[in-house]
Amino acid sequence: MFFFINISASTIYDCNFECNCTCSWTNDPTGKYPWQVVRGSTESSGTGPDGDHTTGSMYGHFAHIESSYPAQFNDASRLISPNLIVTNDEQCFRFYYHMFGADVYQLNIYALISN
Image (tube, rainbow, N blue to C red):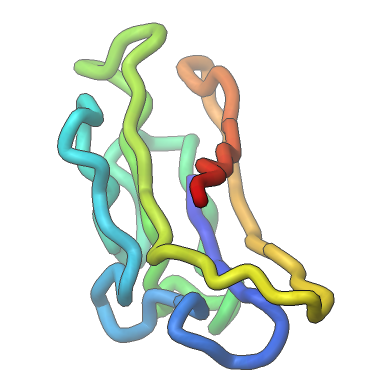
């Protein structure tokens, strides 16, 4: 699975992972396995993409979580964005992802709304 995050105009929320880092995004410490920034093939054969979305090649970076063994059904791992500033302007949350393999279940996107 991989992500490219883009929120409208370039902001601190944008991350294509080409820095070989997660930018301002962080791993949830309660998650079972941490998201990792990788490039090239994934650990499990026949599951990952042939390349990342940004460069379209095996040399581009993407965020990845291994869902094959030793991961188990219902294991959760979360990549958390920086706090979003809500304005009256139109906003868009856009990302690219790849999910493939016998052990892939579902992808959930959650929003935590607070005052």
